[in-house]
Image (cartoon, rainbow, N blue to C red; front, side, top):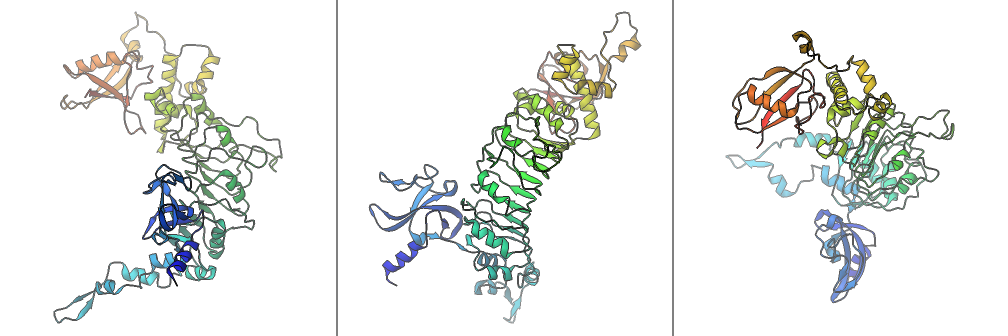
Length: 540
């Protein structure tokens, strides 16, 4: 083959939109955006837009001429065909990663040592025999990972079926797959396959399959450039999905073909939409009638508020006699959004089955940003058993609710029951449940016993590095004691001089004590009651 014929053959390997990797580096992946000559340079070139700007040099233009538009200012470059790889087949990738009996001569030599008589003595490699025994023909392999190995096609279907007939889980993260016809062929070739991870394979919108792929129960499409329009097309062929992961796909709108309700996906129990661009809760409400949905992951979006659907569809419009929004939803992850109102928190009580909620890294859950501490969230969320990944014990719930009632009683600006109910929907219920009576002013002629009954018992612990070792003290104090007054008392109790104090309250379930910032706030206003522990520290 002449050099010109060889070059033409190499160029014919590449097409626009094709996924490729740098020769010898399967982890450096990009998309072909241009094939042809480059002004001022001989021969033909391939223009690549590299994923995540992996070592690019420009934006698709060179010497004042634009050849293509890249995703980033320096994510593109031109390469000779010989510097790129169009990838390998899936069977080749599996054999390369899991075969252990195809050793090079150098690897074979490393398996022997020479005895004193210069005879080759075999050395047993740790785990080698076990791996050889288990995978001598790969038929027993049930789980495989061929991430970042340059897989671009599944190869002959029969070859894949015969190679790994019992494969149940397959991780194809970071490969060169882009066409859905290859994915369908893969699923049909591996009848036992249940879990398929296609993370970081940029999938094209060429979805035309209509037959059913019933063996796939978990499908991972994180960072695949997937739109919701494509997801809608998936519900017919992937009719038996239990989990669908769609992280980091820049999804903003959940586009439905009819009405404002996502239908189908009758077996879907977990939907992961983390790290997308959803900023309206109205988009999430479109998911409220997924009949089997138990877990909804929405961390790292741009949501500002939450509501529970107030106007369910007409009876029978979804094929059921009665429809309950989010009926089976147990887990709702909302971390790292922009929720900043208590009304959103209160609305979570209307979700009929919700017991596990994540609200961390939202303004409403950060006291430093005007939010509320953990105990307030627990008290306002009556059914939650897990908050921010930490179990809410019965003891923590009881203490949080009592402390919350005291907080409301101490800070209430109005005694109108309707106004209090509007601002604190669970206050009256919790006050009655825990038998908390209204605080009554102590009469000046009251005896010592009556006055003592109005005091709260708290434990004080010194932890400041310059305070020395001091035993914890338990003291009875009036609920009206302010943080500033408590600092003065601590100076007296522990004989502390010339030390600026910082006080914290320990809360069960919180990794760090809560800083008591306002000197003018009273213990009652902060919800601190009998049994609380105050940490006495010093300013650094």
